Length: 400
Image (cartoon, rainbow, N blue to C red; front, side):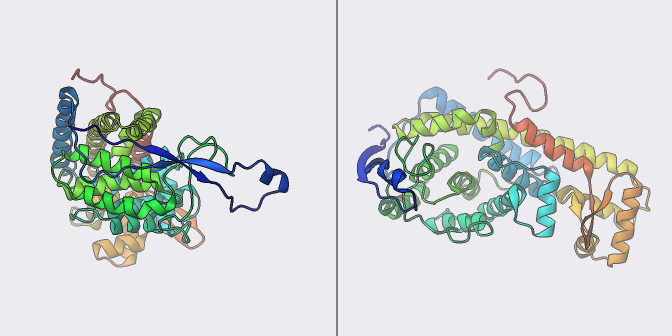
């Protein structure tokens, strides 16, 4: 079988579009080296035995997580989507607390890091909302959802200019990687769409290679990393490995971000094994983290039941599952979700605050909201544990 195709290089003329001083213009390079990315729709691949075994182990762990842990709590999926979006954003060095993200979501604010993470959550939700094979159109739509609120001019639009990673802001000379020239991108995306329709590759292998190819093409001016990771979720969902929720893959990748980027470099050099191994290990870690979060949420839910003092037919009890899914709510939201009057919803929230389950506060001049600190603290702890290399339970991992 032929080796996986590697990136080659071409020299292209460089003409800056930026208004710069005469001195800076004189120091500009006149050419730059850009990637020539191979097509992969029909590329063959053979996995060495140990890597194939690792992929099988990870696939079994993900399937078990999806059937057991993800289905343990009905409202688990919305929380996991937010947590995965926080982790994917952290890879891009965008951080915010769970409370700030939920406040931004509630208020419809798309400013700052919290707003960007809200957009990432919407993107992830779109990625797992369809069971059909992802297409180029779906990729563009995911990008539009991500950057529409913050950069509408480039949202969902294939780039028409050079981009580069690292180096100078003024020109691509000395960059860590220069993706292919813009005219090559449409053909590469058509090839990617054909690759996405393949069914002969193990699901995790398929997702790893598709993600690496998107990162190598870099079809957008910005947001490529988050969109590429959303594509992983779309493919895992479309091929049936994850049916109930989103696997927190980005949380697994956070364990070793430098190795993640190094595996993408290896892919471009014609060695796809490191990115496949990286995703398989991340999937194992993600299943552990997701299982830990589901278990901790179950403990929180049980403690709430011990604290509620209202009668069994009161709305307070029905509100508990809603608060696990949305640990920051207004009385209007609770009224709409539980078919209550706003006044009765507020009474239920006030009683739950009296039981020590909620804390009420004004989050802007006209909006009073109640938050479940137990859940918010868990989400922040999940984000913190995502960057660790030890077992999320705090216990040593069993040898594989």
